[in-house]
Length: 254
Image (cartoon, rainbow, N blue to C red):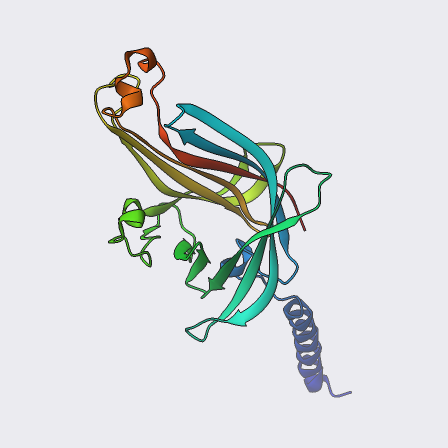
């Protein structure tokens, strides 16, 4: 063999090895960040333990109900803007041994720039990409807050905190999570200001890579200092609130 051709053969062998290695690596596609925090494969599900709260100002009581919910990615469809979207079915059961009952349907669109989730006739921008600490956006931008029923959604500024941190608020610890603080507003405190009207609104969601939403906490109540219940001297220590709240903790997923 001509000694001059040996270096060329060695280079060819090295190139072949490198090419083969790259090809094998490329055969395992990387999951984009915009897909990892809220997987949308058909059949994907997450099960939650749910604590639902109602503050009843008529009877001046706080009612807490506990049950389970399951979110399942059920089908693909094209939305009104021509975008590929997913239909997500929400099922409910009171106890683990009970069968699941279909409760509602949500519609999810991941544009690669934002994650839109529509339910109860409203569309929320639950996430934006890339996910970065302290990045903020108007998550309720698609909601018509001129409607009195939805006015309280006005001007919420969503913000990422605790990006790529572990999260635990129950029986399971989730890794590589991002918390979305949606709103944390408070006006007056009925305990210390019983003669002033008060409002409390809080909402946040936590997403884990490869799982989806693993935690949700929302509550909103109002306090009418001039209502009969709150001016009744016999109820002065009760502080009758009006509103709803929910805590969802993911306990199982595929």
